[in-house]
Length: 479
Image (cartoon, rainbow, N blue to C red; front, side):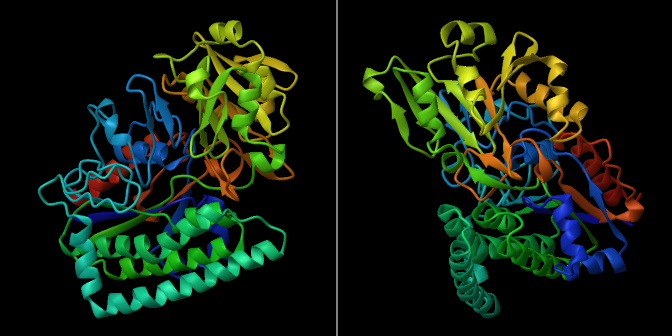
């Protein structure tokens, strides 16, 4: 018998976080899927960078090459590429995914970074705002108006708004009183995510199911935003998992019309310390000191060094969680190791000498170069240092792939772990995008009888054929 497929993307939840939440009884509806429908937890590796745009491109298209970070400098188009509100990916989108078969071809792709061939590609949050272009896709008003027109939805939304505002204010005050440092910008984003985007996404999924779209892919980002604000192990983040669990229950109970359900995440999170707090000054300030005469722009941050009109050159620091890509923005191609050392011999070593930086990655032709506090290592010689972060063989291959991207920074810095927390180049209490800990280990929750094997998935693009085969087998009645 033919079956349809709906995939719920729960952003930022590692396999270990989900396992703990199930064990602690925080997600009873998911536990019901495990007990009553024989679901099992599959672990996989998302690869580097451990970010949503990279992982989601891999899941939806099977190709996440040349997506080096959450934001990056496109040298050819001379544009800063980023996602979220004010997304600019559409300016470079034609360079990506040629020849790929999207996972949601002719289905529905909701609140994702990319439309992925969907007939209904309602954007809401992270997408490049392409919704409305396909004949059957709907605008924001096409979802919002009928949602608010229903008194039940409106009442639920009003109640949730009051509850979320109250809970978030309490959590923020408690965190501050206990000496922790929540990230205010993400506290505000978390509130908007929980009281607005999350509910609309859930409604859009239920509506797509009523209209018999298949496959359906939908992203839910409340946990990730809360973890950025307070940290992934903070009680406020764990409470959001209950909110997510309630949404899963709502969608699971609406599975009419022969739908099967898969849940997955794109990456995990780790507790972090902002670079500026750990080092006593911003990363852009460090770069300006090492590059006298340059104008340095931190993405989503301040400028340092000389003004643009008087500078001898310009540098953009694209900060993304525990990784920072440094670009000399007047160049049309990535600077190789030899040229970088000739022009700026103290730059890589100066960054690597910082206690807040674990290593700096550069490219010398086809060879990887790693600057560390005590010197340089080439190629596989870095593996002993990687063993403290993850399986060194796998992590080394993931780093090599990232370093092969033409779109990666002229050099890439990775934050170190200090007292169990990773140094984060953004102002976040929890983060991802780098190496080490649970950020590299997301999950897939699926029925045991489907026999999914994710044990050899070392990057999210390798998950695409597994999900594509499941989609096709369900549609044909083979599973």
